[in-house]
Structures are given as C-alpha cells and as structure tokens.
Image 1 (cartoon, rainbow, N blue to C red):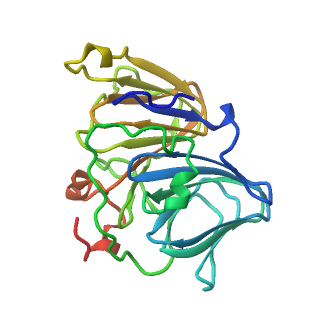
Image 2: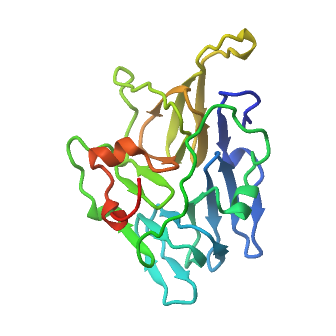
Amino acid sequence: MTIAAIAGTSVVDETSERDPDLVSEGGSRTWSVCGRNFVVAITELAAGDRLTEHDLPDEYVLLVQDDAWVGVEHDGQAGVSVSEPALVVVPAGTSTVRAASSTTVARVFPARCDEQMRRAVNHGAGADLRAVAPLKPIEAGGDGIRIHRLRDIPDEEGRLGRIFRTASLMVNWFPVHEGPRDTERLSPHSHEDFEQMSVTLVGDYAHHLRVPWTPRMSEWRDDEHVQVSSPSMTLIPPTVVHTTRAVGAGPHTLIDVFAPPREDFLAHGWVLNSGEYQGIRR
C-alpha cells in the first residue's frame, strides 16, 4: 500500500497486504480508505456477526456482491434482506447489517460520518491540496431502506455502467467483465475538481496514473502502472490522468465512487435511482 506524500499522488490499498483497521468482537475485519468527501469500507463479515453504525447524519451505501443472505435493520424498524448482488441505500440514523454466512460487503459513507472517516488508514495523512468540490448541505433522500438488485437492471446501449446516488454520494457499479480489457480501447481521462475511488471486488486490475506537471519540478512524478488484486481501493485525486484495465482471465468486478454526485452523469440521465431525489438540489 502507498499513502499520498505530495499533492496529486494516489492512495492504493490492497486489503490482503495489511492488517485490518477494525476487528469486531464477532471477528469481522474491516479495511477503510477515505477521500476528502467520502470513505469506503470493505468488511469480511463473519457469519452471525453485526455491523452497527450509530446516529449517522446522512445516508450511506451498502454493496452486497454475492448470494449470501444479508439483513439490514434501521432505527428499530422491521428489517429487509437481500440474497443476491445488490446496492442498498441505508437512511441516516442507526442501522445494523448482518449476514447468515460469511461474506464480503463494501460500504460507502459521506465524510460527515466522522467515526467512519477516522477508521480509514489514510485519515490524517495529509490532504491533497488540489481543489475538490465540497459536499452540499444535507438534504432528505428517499424513504426507508432502498434495495436495487442488479438482476433488475439490464444492460443499455450508450449508458455508462449502473449508476446510483444518494443525497451526497454517487456509485457506478460496472457490469461483470470477462477476461482482460482490450489494451487498444482504454479511456485515459481526468477530473478537474473531484476525487474518484476505484474499488475492485473480483479479479486482477492495472491502474495507469499520470500526474500532470506543475511549475515546480520537485512535484513531477513518473507515470504509475499499479497492479492490484481484489479486493482493493485506489483513490485518484483531481487532475490525475487515469485509466483502468482488467488483467487476466475470468470475471472482473469494478466500482467507482464519487462525492458529491456528478453533474455530468445526472445531465446524461444515467442515474438509475434519480427519481428518489427529484426534489433535491443538484
């Protein structure tokens, strides 16, 4: 794992390469990496164990990636369950996630969730100095726990991935990609004022990263070509040119995280649950 040392460098974290940031009494192990506006937590959730978050000020996202039974309870109300790949939006307040059998889940919290941010391995490591669009004031999201099952979302020509939002977050869960990506059809690009967290859940990947030159030669960095297995989290700062490719045979699963929600994705009409937030300011 590498931690950002100067403005513009990336944070690359393979969970198998280090000790967890949090171990629960029930034996679940959690690794977390934060950006300026969000934190991603990957948890090896032990059978019968519970992950409880208290008095959260904002919604968060739970990613269930396999067919294990996962239950979610919120503020003492009747719980919901899912036993297939799904994205779950959990409202502000107190909530609990539990599993009948061991599984790996990922959760994405906005930076307003102070305790969750403090768990991150890179919290307090020194902020990137580049401008990042701030989170907007908290606004109400949809009602109750919302489950979005991936099987209910067919591929659509011209749509980029499977994009969901909350009041503060945006998550793009790409369809499973079989085999390696065509190296003649990559997509290097950069973002002017927001960070991207690329989360690999299945398969091996290569991240290609280029830090733009500044007037200070001391800040110049060689291009990075970072190989990662799964699960992993890679935080890409604003202005860093990047592209990612699946490497090797078999299935590959990749998720991108942003905060605040991206205006360009909203404008294209690509956000699948935008109807839940019709009254919210962009």
